[in-house]
Length: 183
Image (cartoon, rainbow, N blue to C red):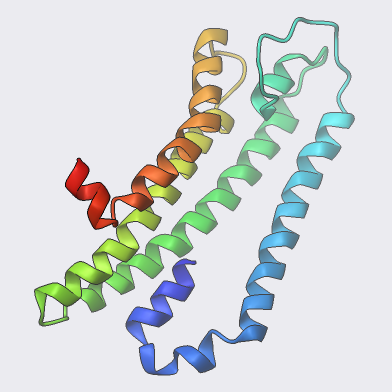
């Protein structure tokens, strides 16, 4: 989505040739394959670990909480999982940030304030929703399991599950003039 907006704003005359059916299929395939690889890594690591019969005080099985249930020392698996997750998330986030930096550089060169407002009203909601999702995901998944409290883990997992979907319609509806008038 960031690449689509980047091309639409920074190179609008070439949009039809750059963002064509083949490009969309490639982007979807890369997303699906990387998601499948990521899920396979975590699923494989989960089934390779012996578990004890410890109580689960969670409503969601996030990786750090699942690793707490293990009977063995999982330092290496935890480091690999967190490192892979961090690299994967940082790569996606970096791509989005670079795209939006280029978009904002282009937008700031637009002479009319109305044109800038239109582009910002399109891009800011997407950037807000993606950032909210990524940052809550980072706090839920990329922390060491050994020194975290169960109640804090539950609150973070709840924020990760509830906050982005709850805020998504609110953030995107802020572009609607009727909603702005009601607020």
